[in-house]
Length: 442
Image (cartoon, rainbow, N blue to C red; front, side, top):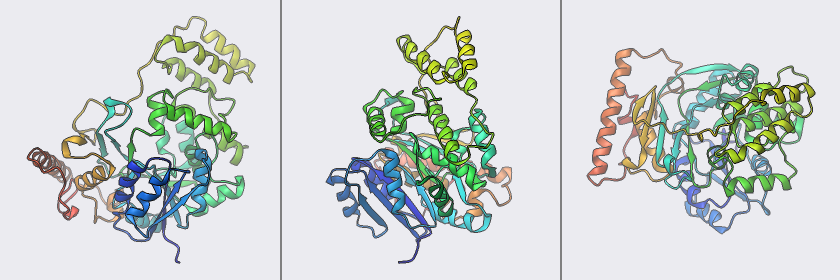
């Protein structure tokens, strides 16, 4: 059997209902040389049944004999892959139909070992926060930047850039040779409490340069079972977060002692960086500014109620306990400090339509109820299918203002048409050539 160009990995556990639609969406690629590895973390038979019902020869299914922590399931999944390039997504996410053809062209011509991109976002109707449900957010720009991995790490640690700019294997794509280099050094590709972010720091350091695209190649789906929602948007006050923590503890995984155990996305970044640095680049002077990290928590304490502040203060103090100078600074800093609860994170602005070169929609208004529907709608609106990788990445000459204006008006007309059809009772998009209508048709 020949080696495929790409391995798409979908780790899963007891999420057959979302996995079904994720697989259906991902199998719509306009490129043939790929495999999909479904690594089932000891689920009930429903997960295997979904794979068997879909019946695609592209899918490789494997079930772990016992429940694993996320790190171990990710490493097991990697051991099953054969592709020259590897990408991971969640079981409520999807790839857009032009993802692999775009990546293949860019890897062939741009001399990089990793490519990241700005994902679209879709909130399933059953998401654990009602205010986020049915939200679809699509980036509309086509820009590319050649990034320096070490500089990006510094920018992320200093808060000048989001962690999504790192060359993550999760909603990103990495050459197998880089992943094998990590495994040869550490014995595994994924490690630490937040294993996917750990790998992004490892890849950033080892791959050197990589491409960062503003065009979306995938959709991050947030459903009732999403880990990210449980941790960052529900502040770990959800059974999913408690289960995740318990399984990590059984596997001997704990946060780095210099990191406070608090419900914040930056904790994931700080812990992953420190673990990757210890494993792969301990002598490099790049470092985490722990004082700045603590200041960020004082500026916006991750609490819903003042009763939660004593725990936050104790965790901040504990994380600094190895450095007397930091302990003294912290004691002075909070002498007259008055904590205030901060609002929970949200990625859904009170917007509809095109704003700041992103499209914001209530997907339910277009008949979308799952990630497969969100993928069809997004692909049709973008109109990227059939375009060259260089065009999608923004490597061709910039469009004129008139052409960009024309494309935006075409998108607005298409949105109005689809909503009108939906109201008239046509809830599903027709299965027609997606190249015939879209924001980027010329």
